[in-house]
Each structure stands twice: as C-alpha cells, then as structure tokens.
Image (cartoon, rainbow, N blue to C red; front, top):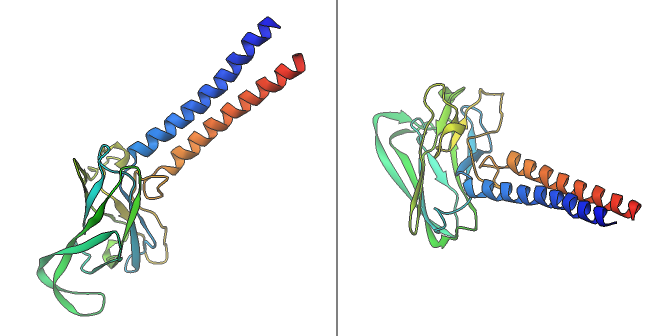
Length: 233
C-alpha cells in the first residue's frame, strides 16, 4: 500500500506536468502571435476584404494606432467603419495616371490607412480591422505585403519585415502581413499571417491544437493512474 501511494502521485504528477506544459505552450503562443491578415478572396482581379488581426499590444502596453501600408498596384481602398477607431488615409501621387477598377483615370492612390483608437486597445484584448480592395490582375502568383506599424502607449511594434529570396517568412521576427494572390478561378483563401492569434490571421491554430493534444495526453495518463490505483487498492 505504501509503495502504491508513492507511485500514484508520481504518475498523476506526470499527467499534471503534461497539462501544465500544454497551458504554458499555449500561453507562449498567444504572447508571440503576430499581426496578420486573412483575405476573403485571393483571385487576381477580384475584390477582397482583408481582415487584419491585432492580437495584443506591445510588450504589455495598449495599442493606440495601427498604420497599414498598401502595396503598389492597388489604387483604391475602402476601410470598413469601426466605432472604436477614427480612420485616415494617406495618398500619394502616381508616377503616371492609371485606370481604376471603375474605368476612371486616377492620378493618386491610397498608400496608407491609419486607424487611431478612440480608447487604447488593452494588451489582453484583440481586435480586427478590415479593408476592401481589388487585387491587381497582373499579380497572380505573387505575394503582396502590407507592412503594418502598431503604435502603443509605451512602445511600438513594426510588422514590416519581408523575406529575402529563398527565405521563409517563419524565420522573420516581425513579418509583414502577406497575401498570396492566386490565378483567376483558382481561389485559395490564405494569407500571411504568422501570428495572431486564437487568431486565424495569426498562425496560431496549429500550435493551439498541439497544446490541446498535450493537455489531453495529460488527462489520459491521470485517468489510467487513477483506475489502476482503484483496482489494486
């Protein structure tokens, strides 16, 4: 009886350790989640709504502003209204006039969209910001990057890094949100996100699933130990 009482807590302790590891792993995932983007459509020449996920603040401080840069080739952008932010756009003059999606000639384009929080977004809360735009017809097979600067009360996080040739985005510390444009008729919704987090735009789901599996294994080990203890008691 004395020997069993020693083994029983040890086995249960192993299960508890696995569960704790899963929780710790999942917590680390949430803390390191990146600002990412999820497109509603990826076909070249089509309209899409880009959802940018803001999973957390900057090292604990609340988010006050999010600035999203628009890649060249996209001349018209419509921000989705958001009651928690004021929205401003920054325009730039085109080198040469272009024809927009409505067939009209334009000499300027929106190069940046800036969301300023009415009240700072707390570090422990997340939010999403949406932009509607048309993907360039000539961009099929290309990756479009949307460098995003997250300004906080006490810090700043610049998600602006782009991979070099042959480099994987996962190797970057502060990757810019990205969208892979597909050929017409070959829509494969996806985008660059590394991050964010419980965030589909952030690249977290696979890690969260791993955490759940590890936690489940801990419970199984604990149950087996409990049943063995009852049978031998």
